Amino acid sequence: MDLLGGIIDVAFDVFFQKLHLRNLPALKDIGGPVDGCTCIVTGPTSGIGRETAAVLVRRNAHVVLACRSAERGEKLRKELYDEGVKEGRKPTLEVQLLDVASLESVRSFAKSWQQQERPLHMLINNAGIFSMGAERSMTEDGFEAHMGTNHLGPFLLTMLLLPNLRQTARKSNHGRPVRIVNVSSKMHELAPGFDTADPHFGKQGAYSSLAAYNRSKLAQILFTAELRRRLPGDCGMAAAAVHPGEVMTDVVRSLPGLMQSAYRFFMRPFCLTPAQGARSSIYCATSRDPILTERGQSMEADNCYFGAGCRCQSPSKHALDPVLGEWLWSWSADMVKLPAKYDIKAHLRS
Image (cartoon, rainbow, N blue to C red; front, side, top):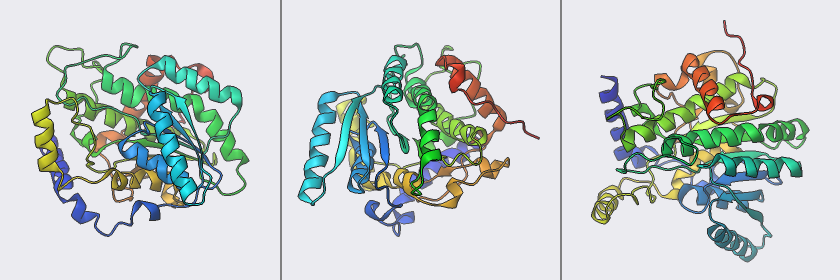
């Protein structure tokens, strides 16, 4: 019954999202100022990531385009720089190589950042995959591809950069926001919990690309809630998970050509544009919404899941389960071999 209810809820959200969001401001009017902030955006060369990076550049942030392809990154950097010059601005942005599906790449990126002792105001974990209809595949580290790319890589990146974020928050005296934003999905509601005995879908017949994607998106929200539980209340930073809405992107590129065309034809009237899909990320990264910084030990305080309407809403019951969240944290740290000095111990709960 829970699964059926989730399917109905997700379908309703998809087909009526434009109606529900009709009064939401345009991306340029969402959130607040970020002048002087240093922001990392993963997966910035297309879709929601590109729009997220672009609006931060327009608001005079220094944006790091963390992407797999230097060529595509440089092309985007030039486009955004030229756009700014035409508007009378002098944008500051750079390209750095990062593949969140590779722990080696994540460690290399983080090590370089740490060695330069750079400030960091925002980490937007936007990069991700949905290999729709494809067979089970593994990352180079031996993780199921969705779990490795959508959760474990970003988990390691976040934990390795967390000291930089916390230090920036301590030193910030201009009221600049310090945020971690994990781009998740309402599809997490279709994940029937988390099979802790088979996180990578190794059992015969257990795998489907949809189930793997849904579980990885659930993991992102579980991680965000657990991070909020573990961060000190006075740390000066906030973490949020967001649902961007159902957005028309290249998510169907793994399907046969005819199916891709059919999907785009039938879904285009209902899907958001990438700019509309970036609103929740920008809101959580830049808004002064007090919900983002509230702390407590209640389930409500643990929750910082924002929907496409830029409002905090309840995720699935599994997403805020503190026992599952604690297990996921421990399992993730073990999977990525997180050094003990980067871990954060769980607070005692009554």
